[in-house]
Image (cartoon, rainbow, N blue to C red; front, side, top):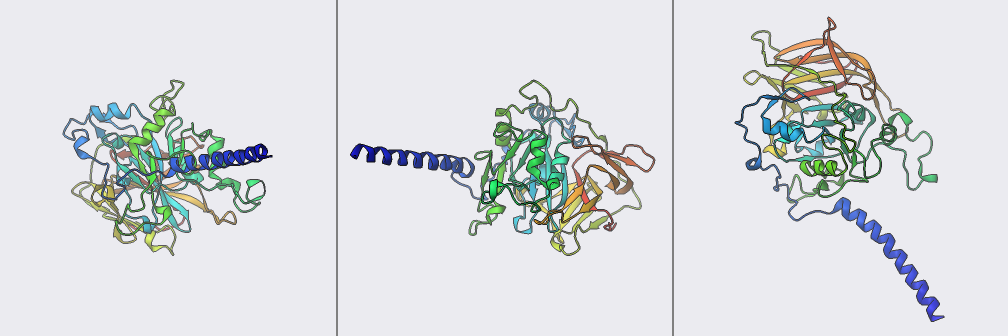
Length: 406
């Protein structure tokens, strides 16, 4: 009898340790934090960055900006990293968004916008932190899919149909529309693949050191809300991608850019008269904190961003104001809410109108994207593909019919 009791107890303990051990391992993998997670700990060590004085002879394939050969040598070991970055008022200032080659902005939920940053060329100069990483939506995935074969897609969860407390683990019909199920789309295009895909999800398959929570990213005395903490360490994300077989070439030896379609680029050529100095617009009329304006800096031929009437700055770089060489207003059809969870959807596959602001001028035309992996192309009123000024590009997905002031 004693032996039976002991065996039962031993089995129970073993099962308990196994289950808690797996849970703890997963928790530790996702949540473990190194010492010194203060907002003052900045990984952007400019002393280790590539000499900015070297001749800039190499064109970035993403936005046409010019870089030195050592920078190109680094980006040609990698593939584009696309990342979901939040823009909630409580998460500002963000970290690292100014290092993106291209940024897309659209409403994620309730009139609150979110970004998809594309990091490739500028990210090769030095390491940095990117925050705050947030959940995915299908239209951001459609944009990310433009950047070659299996771009790195970094996010923290996403709109999905999973429910641990529901019958068979699936939400009841009507809770979430199939068309906005981000996980379903990621599975469809073959990005998830457990812990081996190019899809890097902080909720399921990516943790420290590439991604971790920084409660005190904004304050040494008060923790940010949990959803405003996830922070990525870019070089570690790239190391994880390499370990999974997603560097410049994949595990089959295929380059990421074999089918990548570059945009056209041109050098600065600012106008001298009739300059458009101010651009402003709203996404939703009742969400003033997310109203955007861009003000033209004539001396540097670029546009400086304001959000909710305030300078939009990057915490990673001493609150430097975010700027861009090109501002694209891409008019898109807004639909929704499409389900009981009040998800919106934006049609970025198809065609529509756009405005391009650069060099102090505006160009009108039409955009076209023929499929999920197809590149969005922009054509002027005569049907000629437009050229972007070399440098950062911001694409603002604005509901068709919204007024743009300029």
